[in-house]
Length: 446
Image 1 (cartoon, rainbow, N blue to C red):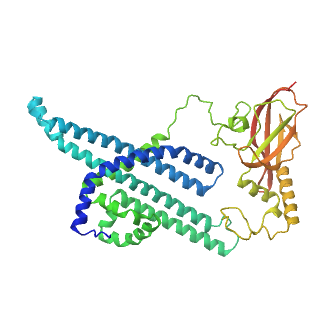
Image 2 (image 1 turned 45 degrees about the horizontal axis):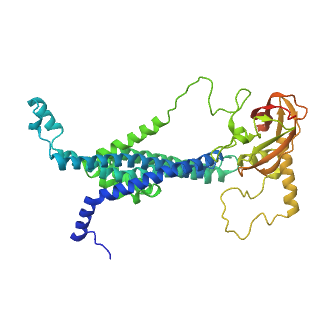
Image 3 (image 1 turned 135 degrees about the vertical axis):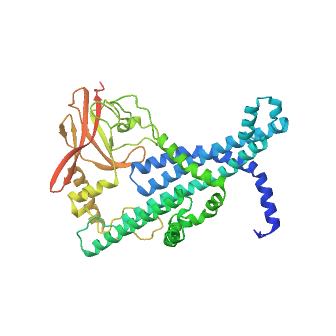
């Protein structure tokens, strides 16, 4: 049956539902808070993986999902507390009725002050009801605001990745693309600035007749890229009354302040930090495979089996990262394919461009790939260079990388420092820098 929103029957139904909605609000808030707290660790894990592997698309997605979860948790917890206070106030009203200022027997000065500031108990209950009802709705409105900001960032990134060319010297076409991309970015930033001004002033640009004509096309454009057409009725329903305007205006600074305060952490040392990289004087657990306890622990660059090595050999595992291939292409331009296959790809594919490459050619290129990798990377123990031959493999955490074994039979017992270096081309010079340093202790297992 289709409801007519202008009919009196439908309006009566809405009035009845909004009076009884507190039960549904509490039920949804309870389930939502439980589900959100349960999902936060998984979201943070996926965000850590995406951040570690430098996947910008996934980083934005999981970061947005994490912030949305915390916005909902924060608002819903406040909602549950206020709704519980509202229920308690209703119970107290059933027992005690309204506030009897005569029964308090205060002086006229205090009685007049309290009557002015507090008023009737029913007014207090009505205020709580207003806050509870509006908080439940504004939770989702704040999420839409945040997603609008993410949409703005994504728009800039899309222009950078698909229009702007990092090499300006390739011809007039590339120069035109860069100029066009820069103009687009400036247009989007300027439009975002005006939209933000209109937001914090609660529609000032829409009120002035001559400004509104200029602002209207930008408003229509940003209503598309920020998806505001999905939540626009909520916005204007908040702004058409004083209570909604005041609450929506206050909550945004509160959330900014909460995010800012949550960035603080306590430091208990001027020199030591638990997340610093391994060095001669510090051993980061992410560089030792036996200390990787769960899926949230990652090998940053390279790892060895343990801090204490008792075998006559040392296994070294280097994690594969996408930028490794870009570095190899600089040292061997023949490895760079005409069609770069990296990036998102659907598994529903009947043909693959790699199939067209003969197997012999692919095998020969793979040999050159590993030869170049071993030429670019060197392994040192206590500043003594060791022969290494990295091959591709997957470790116990199913992470793909490169593995080699070093003969340390002649190494003296005690503390040592493993160092892996990488060649880097900077203009016309080839430099070598330390990629990672890992301290370990070697004791022979007699």
